[in-house]
Length: 165
Image 1 (cartoon, rainbow, N blue to C red):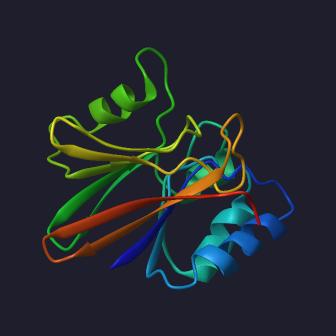
Image 2 (spheres, rainbow, N blue to C red; image 1 turned 120 degrees about the vertical axis):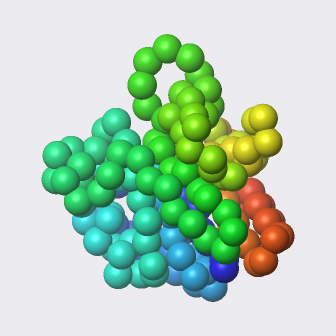
């Protein structure tokens, strides 16, 4: 299973940047995971039309978005439990908030966003993945996303950086 992991697209009405990203970087994936902050319900529909899709809402997402997807998800792929949560909230760092959001839920991987800063690291034996953003890099030098491949007992998580579409 090859999964494209994205977050923080922050796209309003103009989907051209998202479509260009998908057509260039997500062609050979099996599934898309988005960790919130779409900004437009049209982004969710575009992702659903493109590939198998799982996503959660983030702090900038409106009621229309919050009504069609959850704030937090746990999915199972192969023998791995994957938690997905945007990372918004107060107190603590983003990574600590998302880690605490899955306390006691026996997840192997946590996918999150919010900071627009790409991260691949482990925290107490849990693989923590923040893809950054493919369309809204903010202070980062590059746009970014993660390709997560799960095959049997093997996990391969690769951070992809690029200048833009």
